[in-house]
Length: 214
Image (cartoon, rainbow, N blue to C red):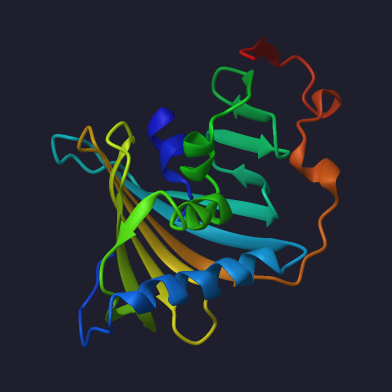
C-alpha cells in the first residue's frame, strides 16, 4: 500500500534530443507550476508502474486524481486518498479502514503533482532539460536531485508537455531503490471543485474503521 501512496505525485521512458541551457529548467517548471496554480480544478487519469528495490515490476495500477490548489483526492482500485490542505485520509478498501494523519510536506509532495512541482524551487538541483517524446507528445524532460541528505527521494524525472505546459509523466526513484513511474493519460483543467470533495465523509462510508494517527 505504501509504495502507491509514496508514488502518486504524483506524476520516463524518453528518447533524448537537443538540450537547452540548464537555467531553462526552472523556467519550464515555473510554467508547469502556473498551469496547476491558476486552475480552479484539475482532473486527470493515470497509470502507475512500481518496481521494487530488487527490480521486480508490479502490475500497473490505474487511478483518477482531482486537484485544487494544495487539495486533492486520488482514487485507485484498492486505495482512496483525500487531502484538504492539512489533514489526509487514506482509505484502504481491502481492510475497510481509513487512516487519518497530518502528513509532512515531503509526504504530500510524493502524492500531489502541485506539491511535487513546488519543491523544485528550493529542494532540488535541476539538470539541463532534454527534449523527448513521451506518450506520443513532444516534451521537456527534467531530472531533479534533492539537496537534503535526509530526503526519501534519490531522483525525480519530470516530463512536461511543450505545447500545454502540463505534466505528462513523473518517474520517482527512492533512496531504498524503489521506483514509481506515473503516466498521465487524460488531463483537464476545466473543473470547479468544491472543498468538500477533498474531505473524507464518514457518512458515505458506514462501517469503516477509523484510525486517527494525528
